[in-house]
Image (cartoon, rainbow, N blue to C red; front, top):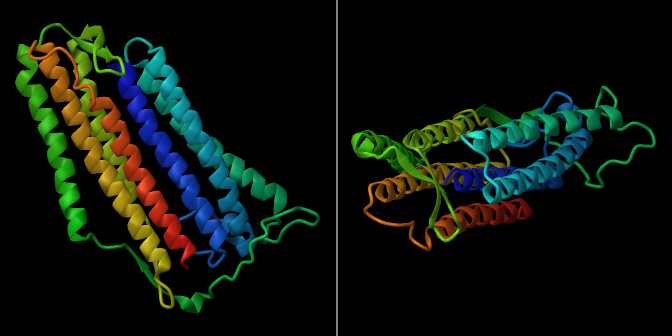
Length: 301
């Protein structure tokens, strides 16, 4: 079970990294603003339109590579799982390292190729995109994109999924045997058993993943532009993706926990054959669909 959980976590996190890389590439390619609603926004990258475009392009490569590494690591840990909770710890370490290395590498790239005022250093190649930054007069104000009805419904669905999972674990805990399914093969059959305390990982990861995405949702800045709303629509799609991932992840972990409890209690022998392929397919379909929508929105500006 641990190897499968680490695979699903790695696929989800890795897909988010790859999606971030695609989004950064799209934002940098527009060349229209140093103050978009999202993107690689640091004091060094915001010095000039040229540094903004270069930073987003370079960060896009870093995050894409990091996402691929995370996914590959998850596949390896699923193929050869480690004991206890080391799989999840390794994925967490790789994720943190991926973020840190991407930031350090991008800042180092900007330092090597741009002066303090944001002008490209002589003889250094930069992006071929032609920037056309907006003036400060075009910026109407700043704030947050408000929650829509869909946002509220998805938040309720996500929270209810987490609460249901915690309730199921508390209710069935006294009935659980000392050994519960620890690892499943891709067909859903149990191939390893472990201490029942391993089931605690379901609500724990569910809560942590939900909190992480909630932080992104609540602290994402948005600039309300007087002349153009394209950036707002792009961010709206990004926030919808986050909300859907939160809801889907919460429901998935709860369903996975329920299936594990059913097997541990002897009510069924294995996971449904289509459970794992369907779970992976839905997760990737959500990310792929919204990535395509965001790219189409970026090209239509």
